[in-house]
Image 1 (cartoon, helix red, strand yellow):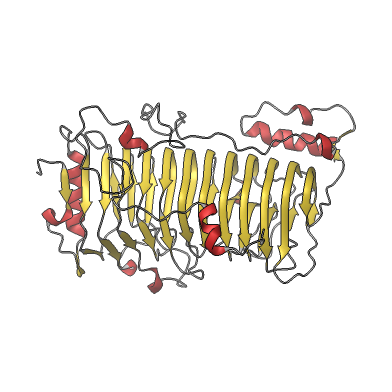
Image 2: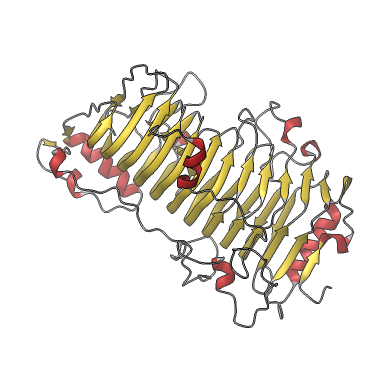
Length: 498
């Protein structure tokens, strides 16, 4: 067993020539690293070293904890290549489960080889999964060409995904870049996301999520949903998306629910988003359906308290109208606020937005808004019923005894409710794991280095700091390019475009 806590897959027999199946050696290395009981250093490192191409042909990896010591650092500095026809289609290729303080970092690439299975059915494996974990950091690595989803994080909390890249063609089917399901306290920032499906998808009962400073260059946008399929209950709340650049996507900012579902989507904030040639820039669709004909149902998830502020850009598609709110009559979309929203057609064609059963207010919105003016007592009550299913105590504005409830404020009186909600992956969240919070004082929004490493025990011996502007002890060891929209805009947009 290595005495420095670094478990290189090469030490366990991995060849790394790109053709020899290294599956067995990789599994042996993980098992040894997970059994590491700590000391100096306190955390074990599972290392895929630079200069090698490790090949996976015959195995799906379900790497389960709990692990000893102070968690596990998985450093991907080389290349991991997969032959997806040799692995099981129903399981992720790499799945990390029930591990506390998990860091997946490095400057390497994980290539799922999805080209050989794209178009061959919908049962294809995800490339990388994090499941039932608490205290997770994913940074530096690039995921490419997965058979299906690039990165899936489910049933987990206190997650930080940053300086992370996905790189797959726009026509690669179902290749969501980041899939979040039943998660709490998540920050996604400084990422470049390119794929063939949702750039970020949020499903299940998920809350307290921030997505900021991301560049999406191919895909289906930042989506909440789909939710409510086969009458399932879902409760998504407190999601903030800010400082994003969306280029050439099918959708921009989307909320999608099936008819017949139960629960709520509320407390969603979109702020400072720039788009170019996005077919459907702003969407709320309570009639989502993957296969025609679609089955109608009077029930639906309640969608309310949604705000859009500082959204600008162009669409290349006329029929979407730039703004598309298709909400149900019985459970309409309520309390939507829009401020400083400007969507234009890239060729100057007229846009007619769609506001179907949508109730709200707007200031400085183009194309114009066509809100429903009065919400019936029965519709308000239906929203309150769905809110209670997600633990809400009922809404004062939905409990009115009057015949109708007017949700429309005058423009001069519209409150500024669109400021970003301060969300940080530090709040204790309930998980199906009996573990205590592991990062009680981290502040990733302002941290000067990796918040997992920042909270290491005092006796931890870290590797020497890299000779770069990144702070000591942080990963990856190479400085990523700047991804903030203000930097991107200098090279991507023309003066006066927004």
